[in-house]
Length: 201
Image (cartoon, rainbow, N blue to C red; front, side, top):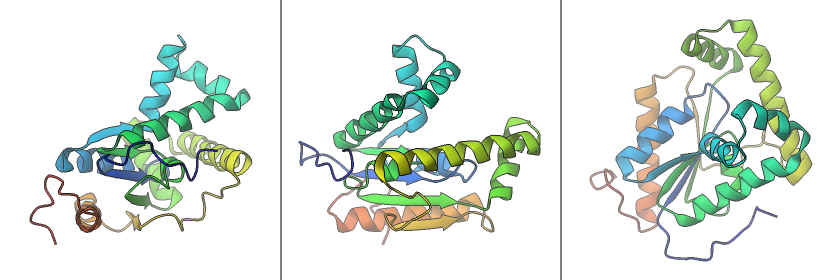
C-alpha cells in the first residue's frame, strides 16, 4: 500500500506535487516552480523513461507491456514515493499528487476543459484535433480505471488538493502567479525558506 506512507527521514526539504490532465499546463508550471524555488524537478514521465531504459525497452514497448502487467505501474508509483521522500523536489504528473498525498507539503491541481486541452496539445505537437482527442480520452480513461482498480481512488474527486487552478480563461503568467504565491505562503507557514519566496507574503 503506497498511500498513507511515512518517509523514514523527517529532515527532508519541501515537496510540491503538481497534477492535472494532459494539456493543462502542469509541466510548464512545475518546471518553473522548481527553478524559482531552488528545488529539483521530477516527472512521472521521466521515471517511466528511466524504467524503460533499465529494462532495455522503448517507451512505446513499455507502454504496451504496462497495459497487460499492473506491476509496471506499481513500480512507477513506488519510485515516485522514493523521489518524494528525498525532499527538495517539485514532482509532476497526472496522478502523482494522489501517490504522494501523505508526503507532499503542497498539492496543486491544474486543469482546463477537454476541448481547450486537446487544442493545446494538437497545436504544440502539430497533430490533428481528432487524433489527439481520441488519444487523450483513452489515456485519461485508462489512468482513472487503474487508480480505481489498484487503490480504490476516484481521480475525478479533487479533495486531496490544496489549490485547484483552471487555466482556460487566464494566461499562463497570471495562473503561475497564483500558484507561486500560494506555494510560497504554505511553505513559509511550514517553516521553509525556499529561494524566491523571501519577499512574498
